[in-house]
Image (cartoon, rainbow, N blue to C red; front, side, top):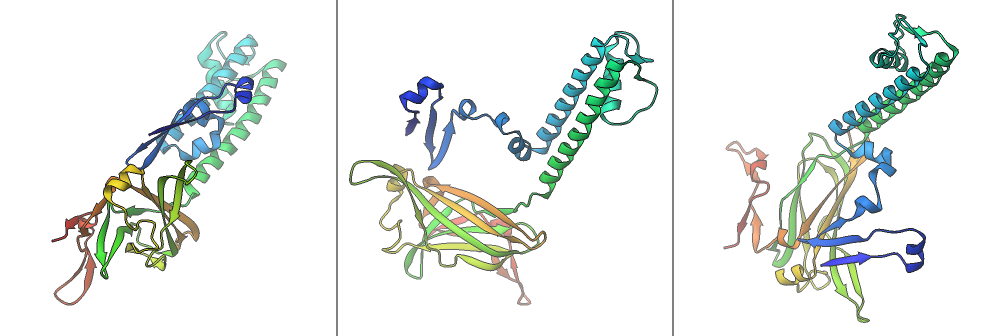
Length: 304
C-alpha cells in the first residue's frame, strides 16, 4: 500500500515540493523521497552525531583537506608571499596552511607580506574555531548514553493462565542495571472510520508488568489478550490485511552513567508466531544454583 502526500496547489506554485512515498513492508513503514524533501546536509550537527565513526572521521578529513586547499589557493593568489616557499608551489603553501591551521609553526616558512599576514590571521581564527567544533562533536558522540538491549527476533501468542497472551523477550547485554526501566508496547494498524476515512491508529497495550526496579538480565514482556485488548479477536490474516505492527519502547536510567537510556524495537505481522512458546533459558545446576543460557534466547517451539 502506498500513500502520497502533496502540498496544496498554492504552496506548490511558490516552491516545488517533492512527493513523500510511504510503503508498508511486514507492518514496517518505509519512507522514500526524503533525500529530495529533506537532506541530512541541512542538519549537519545531527548528521555528524548519527553517522558511524568511520564516516565521522572521513567527513572531518575531507573538510580539513578542503579548508587547507582553499587557504593554499589564497596564498598562491598573493604571489611570492611566503618566505622559503617555492614560488608557485601548491604543496609548499598547502603544508604551510596545515602548519598554520594546527598552530604548529615550525618557523621554516612564514608570511612576509601584509596580504599573507591577513590570510594567516583569518586561518588562525578558523583553526581555533574548527578545533573547538571538532572537539565538541567528538565529545558529544562519546558522551551520548546508549543502551545495549536485545529483543527476541519474534513475538509469540501463547496461552498463559488459560488466556491467550502476547509475549516477547528482552535482555540487557551490559553487566549493569537499568534502574526504573519502563516498557511501553503500542499496536499500530490501518483502520477505516465510520465516516469512511483512513486512519493509522495507535493503541496502548496493557502489560502484566510494565516496569521493573532494576533491569539486569532477561525480561519476558506479556500482554493478556482479553476483551479489553485491541488484539482481541484478531487473526494472522487480519494482522496482515491491516498492516499491523508492534512498536516497543524501553526507557530507564543507566546506573553507570546516571543518564536516561532508551531502546526500541518493532514486530511486523509476520514476526508474530501463533501457538508457539519460547524455549526456556533459565536452568538449574546440580547443586541448586540457577543460570541463564542466552544461546536459546531467540528459539521457539510449537505447542503440542
